[in-house]
Image (cartoon, rainbow, N blue to C red):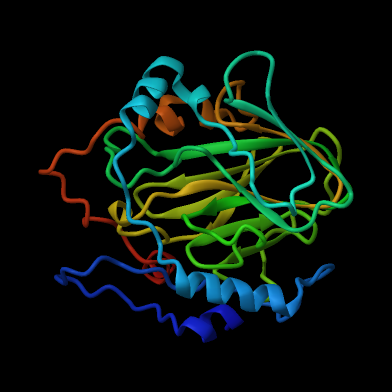
Length: 301
């Protein structure tokens, strides 16, 4: 069990049939490593993140501002981009692609860039908005260079800016230095897949979320990898979830929210595109608590 769980005393419970309580996340079956394979964050940064999460509660799901909805209606997926961080730990440059709109965002960092988490400007999973006809949401990164660390995943706000995705509450991450997966795991993560043993220039890694099962999965060069975590971010209406990119050291890559074709072909279908979900308010008659099984239930079915 991770230090984060011990500190905040989280407990996963099973869903009882007939209960009004929504299903909750249960831990993945793989053992969590105590230490990172190649890198280990300083203990004081871990402690500071625990204090941050205790001091600043999660933001509940919110209605998008009218100008954001208008922007989504006008630009579609190109309304999504990566927010420029205020943290001095980020040393680098973020720019929208010249092809128009921040649906493609180029990010370059310098060797002195420290661990930092970048979030999308808009939620990719907007709790108060409709998912009818949608399978899920998806985005990708195209890696040009990775001499440091890149991690791809999701997070809820506020998230400690000095922590990589998956290390703290309500956050998932796939770390491309050691290919371990993390969900609220402040230790060394869990082994994920043998399908990747190195990252090379031109590689594409994607992150997707299935609405029905609450499954987070990742892709590699257009191939969908096994489920990383199932039963997370449920009930869906309780929170907004943002794309999260973790960085350290010298890196060069692009983030694609659909401004260009995804390498994972299924992601190009309407059922997976971010703009078909956020901005379409869910009807009050929709039972937003009617979510499907927890991780353990899905695994045993």
